[in-house]
Amino acid sequence: MWLSSNGASCDWLERAQLIEACLVVAINALDLPFPQAEADLVQLFNLTRGWFLDYRKPVVQDVHYLCATCLSRDSSFT
Image 1: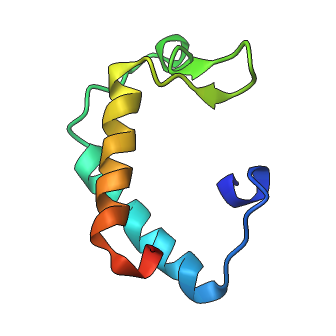
Image 2: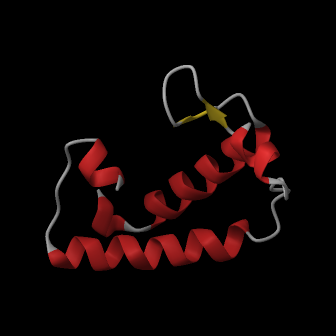
Image 3: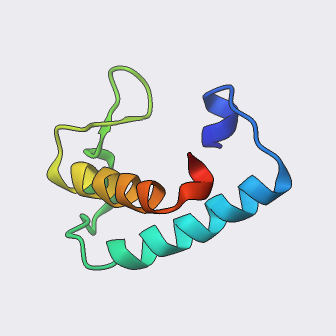
C-alpha cells in the first residue's frame, strides 16, 4: 500500500527484503505501548490531512525509529 500511495515501485527481491524487514520491525514493536481501543488507535493519525500518521505521537515516533534503524542496518536498502 505504501509503494502504491507514494508512487514507488520495486522488484520481487526488494519486496521480499521489505517483507523480512517488516517482520523484524513488527517483532520489535510488540512491546510498544499501542492503544488498545479503536478510538485511541485512530488518534495515531492526523485525519485533517487524510490517513497520515501523526508524528507528534510518541508511539508513532518509536515505530519510525524502529523502521529507520532496521533499514539503516541492512545495506541492501541503500
